[in-house]
Length: 447
Image (tube, rainbow, N blue to C red; front, side):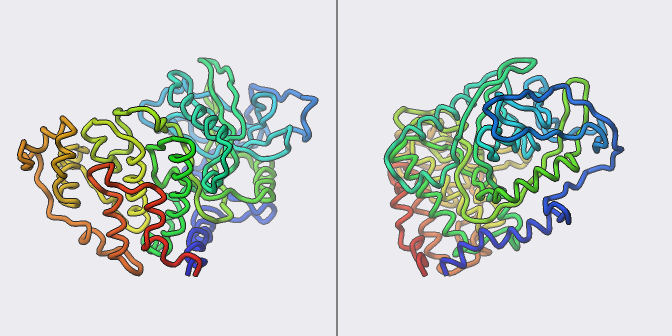
């Protein structure tokens, strides 16, 4: 049963090949599907490749003509993000060598703080991923680097170290509008979020979910007990499957040379269409430490995606390691349920803390007096006797009713495990190891 459950994190990859890629007979690489047809034209890159005596492989020369150019009037990729400011993004070009070492091959992702590129390490002759941060206020960017450096400094052996994305290198580059930090990582595959969406009904069964959650908890124990780091942003999109084999990435590179990525060329930059590549399957590893915090300090700042926020975060009170335990429960729920446990939106469709808290009362019951008394913002929601102030109607829902469509054996055991993690009082929540060694989660291991 354990082997079959672990395969669930691989079985869906076949669906990914069918749904998101088509094979090229000569390259066996994913082929992109453009959102709009576009003419092919000549483009001339504005950077040239420089040689280095340390290189062990020759940089590739990418075509400058016959490219698929996309309509300049249609927003693409990072341009579609809210508050997009082009000058904050480093204008990476395909084939550019960064830090006199890493040649960019193809763009594979983007976000509000960075673009992500598959690249070739010309010194080690290996494939890497470059996360090129935007310029400007780099507190979060420097924080992620600081957290990775700290994790790398921990010498004690722990199995959880293997379940966290590795930082291979970092460097800074000067762009037209400021300095950018670049993190160098091992290539990884698709996110667990995409994987779950490709599963039948956009969910996994309880048995199929268990191996991934076990691995996440082992990684979390390493972070908490050895590194003293709180991740604060556990969600499916930050869990990535293992990357493809080197032979696959080599074919991917060849395909980019013969048939480069679609792009739109603007006056001061080129916006590339992101490509994806297949994972070889396996359990996901934990990534993205841009919101991580030291566990050795007091914190009360706002963290976590809205629907995942722990009650102490909603109430702007101090929080610690146990926010990650709350998040593990939310991640587990998202794997087995087609809807998030929390909706949190008011009648106007706006996320509202009052609605969020009312839903928690419906799902978990009222908080204990100790929890309310230690958090001054509790007075917004409850009076001195603990009576709800009707700041929002308490919905007629329970965890049991929301879990009606959850599939798998021992649903009762799962809901008990879930409630262990979703305690009002952080100190009442188990540690990562305690949650890992729960009888329900351990059942089926080794079978």
